[in-house]
Amino acid sequence: MTRVNLLTGFLGSGKTTTLLHLLANKPENENWAVLVNEFGEIGIDGALLANRGATLKEIPGGCMCCVNGLPMQVGLNMLLKQNKPDRLLIEPTGLGHPRQLLSMLSAEVYQPWLQLNATITLLDARQLGDARVVANENFRDQLVAADIIVGNKSDRWHESDRLALQRWQEQFLQGRPFVTTQFGQISLSLLDTPRGSPRPIPQPEHHHHAPAPASGIAALRLEGQSRWRRALNEGQGYAACGWIFDSETVFDTIPLLEWARLAPVDRVKGVLRIADGTVSINRQGEDLHIETYASAPVDSRVEMIHSQSSNWNELQSALLKCRLR
Image 1 (spheres, rainbow, N blue to C red):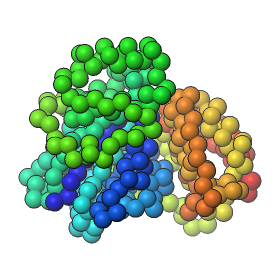
Image 2: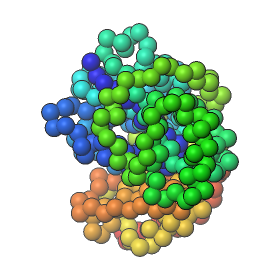
Image 3: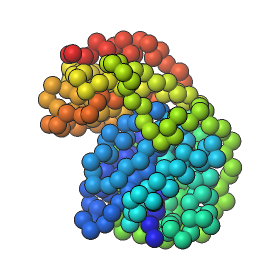
């Protein structure tokens, strides 16, 4: 049977970083697969997680639990049939609701094939001080559905964050395991924790915000001779704008990083080609993390998410000025 874990957490809680840590420590004799979903259609996580020793399937363009879970079922069935993984890690979008996804994974049709283990939910204690995040139904219900809660990014917490976390634990933890870490560095042993007793999870109020991509499970690609293109997405109180550039486009590193750092948006993620290879950008609020690699990416991708629609044309104009060629 394929051992399955759901890895959830609100926007910017560190899900992809945690996945990268887990994949870096994967036992060599095991066949792993990752099913990842993103709010936008660009497919940043797919670029970040590619060539990490696991089979990867992407479901871009919104919540994988919506539209009766059809894109999710297609991606899941393909992985099980073609790859027969020993372990499957599923990362829904930070704006995704866990109820329908957990219901699907525990359905009778999958019981001969899947062993559904603990749902692991990441929580940045600073989120508890953001009224907009705390009021979000997906944030609340992700924590309700969790079997294990990981307090991530503890190196960035202030005393007020720790006090807010303590108050939250006293009211909502309800005896569940709580692990504190940073940079998503959790033990692989957590993945084999059995699923806890199912807790009542509220029915999500949101509806799918856009039609599923035509392919159902494919990230955005360039068409014909296009050098770049843009994709917009809205729903659940958030808006996303992403760009994809061809493999020949090279960005000037310093102006690009300044563009990402100063953009008036909540979230920036990207994997882009620079003169020295590749830079990955991950910004949540004022937290900016960058990494560089010597190898060049297949193409360049960057996406922004904000709690309201932004002036995407202005941000796009500034981004295009960051190109060397």
